[in-house]
Image (cartoon, rainbow, N blue to C red; front, side, top):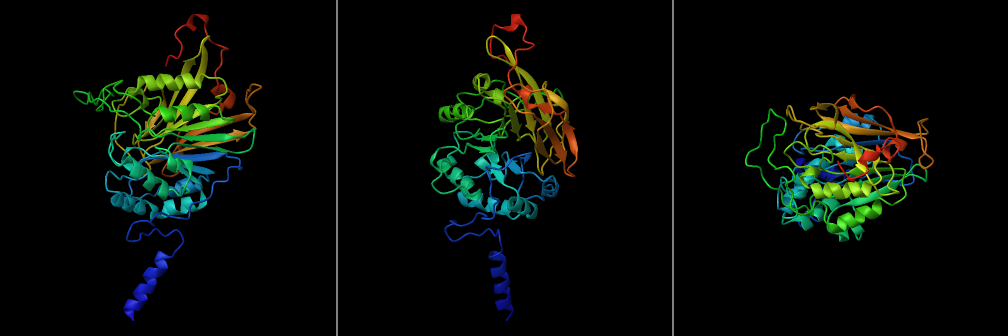
Length: 393
């Protein structure tokens, strides 16, 4: 009788909503209880984060849920897979799916995701990772990507969504900084930790591409799609360039190429979201673009880690706004449609508020509200002598 009751209990658990299970061939293992994204809805609150070690407690989901986001974006290291065995990878995703707070979030809030190195398959890995095609399918299986979708047919997991009606359209661009990335060059030493430039990689050390030509062509097309705000999600930092770890500035030619895209007409307001670093910070930089010279403010919100913060000290970032936050954290972007801010004829009354929030959900870093009209190229204050030498950063 005891065995019968034990069997019934195990069966009830297995059939519970959102249960994650696996058959002998590991073909059924991912959750099927994801909240549906309605692309017609107006987005006013976006939460995001990165670096969630599946074997540690993750209490931060409570604060994220209480922030009542319309959308949550995972920016990579969503698990720490670090394997070439896809059964092991699936098992680690299964652990993540079983986290109670994450279960509640995904059942209530639509989730979009990209990956970074550890959920891709290996620390700091790029195009050389031998199981990247297999890992892509595991990732897409877990996040409920429909069979036959373009994302399943195309190498890499980059994707884009436009959410909201005309006049309030938010485009989410999810970049893949792993699948195509060329090799990095090591420094002879890690540098001076106290001096703020510590890390394994030489500056400007990237050999080849970061995104790959197909993804670049796709990105250029996406940046011309109609939208009032573009949120570009990169697993690694776009603006911070002085540390010795992974970042866009390891590939200076790729940064220059991106800046040229941002200079094109029709791109409109853009912000970057990033993760990876196991600390949080907000970077802001006025980028000089085009000829004659125009100026575009670029913001990069870095949120990391959801449950594995670092005690790193003294890292230099000339673009940093305020200070670094080293506790568990998530990022939060509030879009204030209808705000009475200065505007151009091309952009609506709207502003954004960019925050890093703590484990308790309290803002610990916050930018003042920024009008969307301030996030587009402007020549109002461009000095004539700066017209030469375009695309400086």
